Image (tube, rainbow, N blue to C red; front, side, top):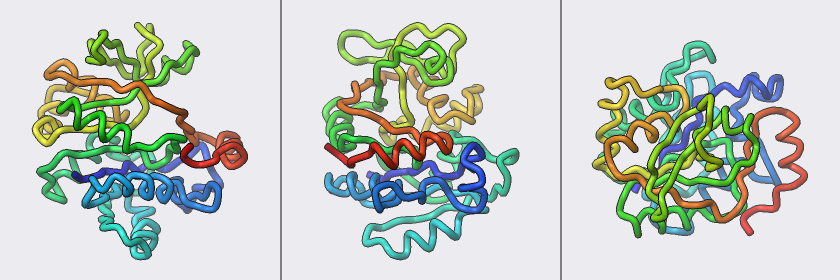
Amino acid sequence: MKCLILAAGYATRLYPLTENFPKPLLKVGGKTILDWLIEDMDTAGAVDEYIVISNHKFADHFKQWAEEKKQKITVVDDGTGTNESRLGAVKDIQFAVDVCHIDDDVLVVAGDNLLDFSLTKFIDYAKEKGSTCIMRYFEPSLQRLKKSGVVTVDDNDSVVKMAEKPDEPESNWCSPAFYYYTKEDLKLIAKGIEKGCGTDAPGSFAAWLCTQTRVHAMEMPGKRYDIGNLESYEMVQKEYRGIL
């Protein structure tokens, strides 16, 4: 299995901290955000290659970081140099699939999120279901739901509907940027883009894919820490205690 790490954003809301430095390499509790994610996933022994998708501006930062790691880490440069010219998460996934000739199941994770539970639980869940899977957590805030991916599920965890940033959310189940795509479903990304699925938000392809095949949604067994601005970064530095 391959793990694609979405790290091609420009984190403009964290300026000046990230004006010349990538957000996924910011440190929390003495480790970079990426180190927390990779060291956890590595315990499952399921990932044979980590592929970090970077923009051109920060690619060298990631390459330097990767050289010091024991895991097999490939950094791909999507060629963009500004926030305005970014490809968007879905096109970045397609770019990595094409450049790295991926023909395998893939775990896709946001490179700027931290979890207090192990992602190995999600990997085990997806393998048990034998399908593409997403995660979900209960979000009481209507305003936050309108800015997120929202899913409706049945009693068997099957996704009935998924929408990115809906004006009228149909449930309180919010989907973070962590996805498990089977290699068969991964081949449908180009078709999804052709059919008009959104390309900026990472969940846009998953939302389209739910209309084509069965997708399951695992309820998160813990908390996610999203570092979106300076205030949230300061909070995470104070509160995050690693995987419980």
